[in-house]
Image (cartoon, rainbow, N blue to C red):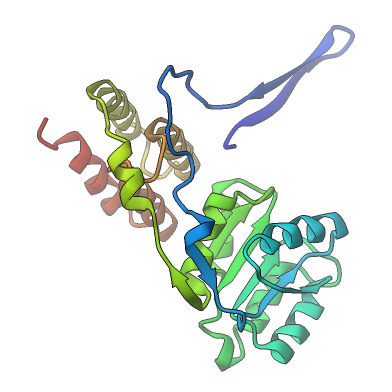
Length: 257
């Protein structure tokens, strides 16, 4: 949820624990929370999905999640098994846990990428680590996407739509976009945060990512016109393109009212 948990402690005095969730109280009524409709999405039965995950409980959760989509899964309990199963099954998609016994997800991905037939295999990193540095490392080492646990269905489903074979798919983003109109108050608030974003040192990547995620919570949904810009800013940060980050921020700040 892009929040923070920390504690402050003094010997012989006590300890205070903090939980901070960056959500802004709103009176607005959101008519449509999800941007993808399972009833209009049908995946081909020929899809092969491999999940590298050592935790049995996580395996069950993922299995239940994919069951809604009518998709069958294959599991590997560690990185070594993930490599063996990839060679054997030739999956359409691989979900790779980053921390596993025997061999972690990062090393397993690098070894899988050594095979020419798996150079373009879509691999999703699964991790409890929400830090931007962890995501950057994963994307720089052969993984295509990075999702944090527990899996957010609305983040996972668009990736499945891009990577798996579809029998039929209809998106409802257009309907959602029509329902959500940005008020002048929302625009002012978003631009205020973009001003704050522009003042962050361009080399402080973690602070930039934290701020973009904070602005996304104000946007409410991905059909908000500022949401794709925030994604582009994050991509530019991970690519180390500081000039592009500044250009994108200035585009928002200088747009006509």
